[in-house]
Image (cartoon, rainbow, N blue to C red; front, top):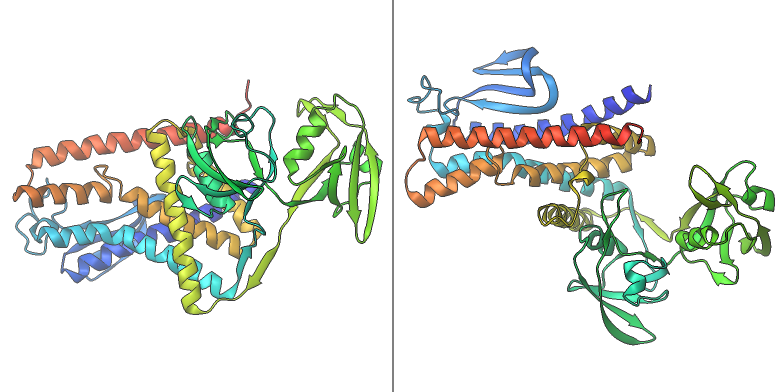
Length: 439
């Protein structure tokens, strides 16, 4: 049942993205009076559809994609080559706009989705005191670089007053690359450098610092030391063995290092403060000591409804952050600082779509906006067969003042197709390897 649920929602997600993207190409083509032979949702054999005017609106067999077929678009389409309404007969600047219109509509969609959501529900996590470090993992790059709990990060890679979202974006896309960080410690600004390592499991960069926050007991494993000691869901964790708990990793690292020795926890339950002793047990599944509790952050969330202008402004800022993350991720992959294994394919997207749908409409809308801006940027990459490749070839022709030969265009498109298929095979293999049991 879970498989079909995830499949349904990923089809909804991709379907909306494709429809809007192809509508951009379609509307631009119609505006410049280009004859459109077909508007297809999906690739491959035609399943069903209808004809309206000169265009065949169809649903094809493979739902992961879509296209607008314009007369004279292909170099070998000799019949439409002399058609004044053919794509290749239009001025280059018009063809460039038609190619750009698809990604542009995805950008418009992502902005519209978030702006509409923020007018109904806008939630902002308040980081009191700024980006303050709550825990440093012993032996981590941040530990070796001299960062301490309580340090406030006031600048990273030239970005002033970053949020933890900004910091984690830089961190996870910068494995094996030095990051320039400015911190504030006891009123004094200090400059430091940290080189995140590549996490073998998640294939992203990790520095080993965590944000400061209050930590709650989110859940308890039945029969484990946490439950036996009297901990309850909702308890606020204050300290362990006399050291303040300002990050879930603080508790985890302390328990892992106990070798089974009892730990003393100070908690707050309602208005009452309690001291609880628990004896960790070794988990063969996790391969370390545990007390069997799930933790969650106690977040200070502001919940409101924004007006149209404020909602649009926040939407633009959120989409700009998404675009920066995509850029840094692609840059990290090219520079081999981020593993390509971090990419999500259709199977991974199906799982994420299903999880987002279960969490409610706001989460799914945010995912849809993020995927939409991802699709826009991906399609603008200068890879032949993608919109960015078409735009690049048109710009080259504009600079040359003449068309590239049909043979050159055909060869470039074939190379682009082979490259794109290689990427598809890689992400599919990557998806499958994540769900297969590891030997």
